[in-house]
Image 1 (cartoon, rainbow, N blue to C red):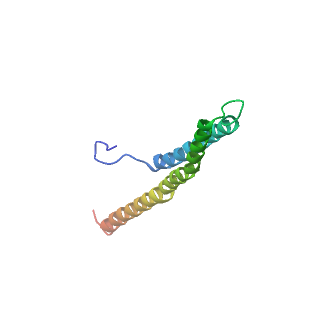
Image 2 (cartoon, rainbow, N blue to C red):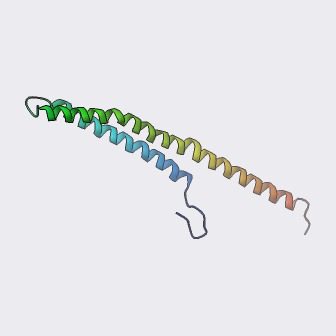
Image 3 (cartoon, rainbow, N blue to C red):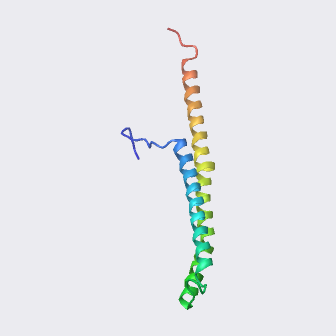
Amino acid sequence: MPEDNGTVGISYAELTRTAESLRTLIRQLRASLGTTQTIINSSVGSDEVWNSDAARKYRNQFTSFTNTFDDFELALNKCATFLDETVVKAYEEADKKINQAASDGLTSRYDGATE
């Protein structure tokens, strides 16, 4: 969000935290999916709980969904890695260059100055 001076107030630490939050969320989603899958596999389609054509169709649809989850997980992990390894590193390097150029400019400007 822009601050009053027109700059964007995002820090490297925030970007790193966002990347880690993505990783945490994907782990939580994976765990929830695993729990749900265990429940469905142990009950849907069994004679004790629910065994019908509809139950088998539901179980197949859920299995199809879980197969696509891997792609979703991969995409989120790629986003997190992009934040860590590309965005943060690139901005840190740019800041170093800017600071060095500013420092060099100030040093060369005042070398040999007399009062």
